[in-house]
Length: 393
Ligand SMILES: [Fe+2]
Ligand SMILES: [Fe+2]
Image 1: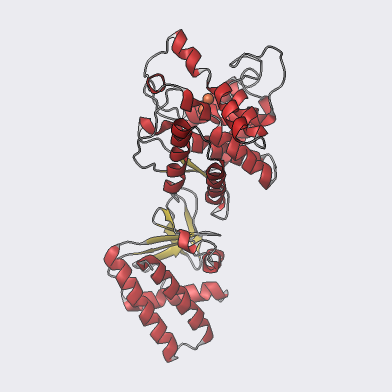
Image 2 (image 1 turned 135 degrees about the horizontal axis):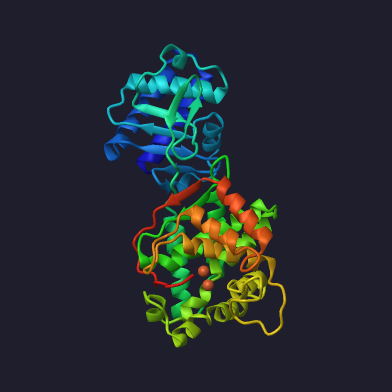
């Protein structure tokens, strides 16, 4: 078992024992000392461990601790207002015992005694609520920590999406189960905290564009569908559709995808084939994914009938396509590209507003802007990769 897991288990075992035995009971003292030893071991590895307790999982540093998923204590600590715990090396047994007293009071719902006696004491253990970026939320008796933005690395999801694209390009098979697993996992990341967050990835390297963009469009599509009141099953279907909307780009040659300048008409025609190819790939893989294939086909079609593929008969696009279209353009605009810098969110939203009724469905565009203004963005780093680069949205 890893040191952070051993420490957390010893911490919560101690809280359980403290609720059963009186303050002077030897079992209580023994548990505190044992847990402090686990903490000392952890501090030997990491001089400032940081834990976030969300409703269904624990995040250690920036990494979700999969081994503690659905651990009941995560929810109990979060409910008690301990959503974040940071400990500095050099902490003493006395400080730790003090923290355990306060945590025990919070978990049992009793009024905190120690904090009231020692307000504003600089301590090497800080805990409190997870708030918005830069915000300081009060917790307990005037005790607070500056809450850092929860930053999900989403490393495993990024690896999975990169693999899905590679597998499609090389073996010609669409790994649908993996795509759906990624969507479920993104949904957990969105609902990890007490409130819904939108964990958008920031592009670090141009050659990660496909992966980063696919995940972001999946996340934004799910968030928007949820905002609009769709049920969980539909929200996941929209997430899968967002994740796979550009899958047809696996058929576009790499030199076209990475070309920094303007494409020639011939190159443009090849790139513009990706919606048709994407829809075919998805339909050939699974007939159940009608929505995803419609979205792959229609995500570059504008509300006024413009865009591509050119429709021979004017008809309305699927609602999911109109939804993914807005999310797709937004993420593309807010990403650094070889030929232009990323736009500010406000500028991208203004663009979407201006093009409402021409390119975008007005009510979808309005709902998207309202959502983005309401939510705090959660941005996580993307690790280096060799994923195929892409030049356009
Ligand atoms: Fe596209
Ligand atoms: Fe796209």
